[in-house]
Image (cartoon, rainbow, N blue to C red; front, side):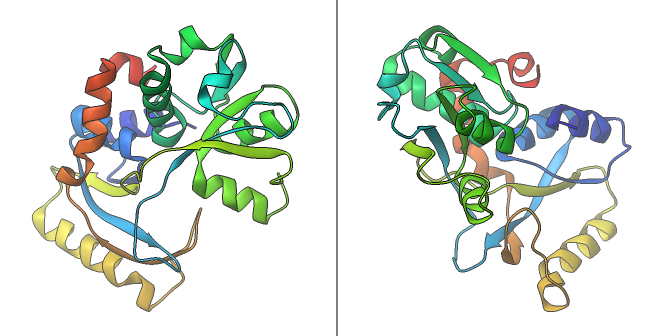
Length: 225
């Protein structure tokens, strides 16, 4: 139901392999010995990266992060990268304040889709999301570019990795990696977004996420709550 549950399941060795967001992976690395080994390349691109976007109701007069002072805003989840950490970093860099202090009302919607729909339905003035979800929902007609307007976007974020428990047998890890890296040759590997293939990835590629959390002074407990 949420990233925290997956991390706890891996910590208790009820889960061997999991698909994490970048920030939840960092937390899983700390809490459950998770080890990133593969990341998906988005179809039609050569990149695994994506971006965080902040959207506002079109026609509301909100055109930038600074226009959100005193407004009602929804993020996704404290352990979400594009819907939690990165938009928090964007707001802090732009305004000098944390979202809880800058916005008039601040909530977590629970899912990316719910955050977008909250804007469309007028429940909140703006919301944070991933560009992946935004484009997928537009394509499905769930939201429109005439209802949910992007007012800010982040720098590229390292893609969400597949990770296994570090204490798995080396022989098993090797088989898992080989299976995942070659899966596109036998089946459609697309899931939440269309993917062309998986490539190897390492923990070091997520240092920018660690740096953001450190600059914001976020504790492990704050990111997991």
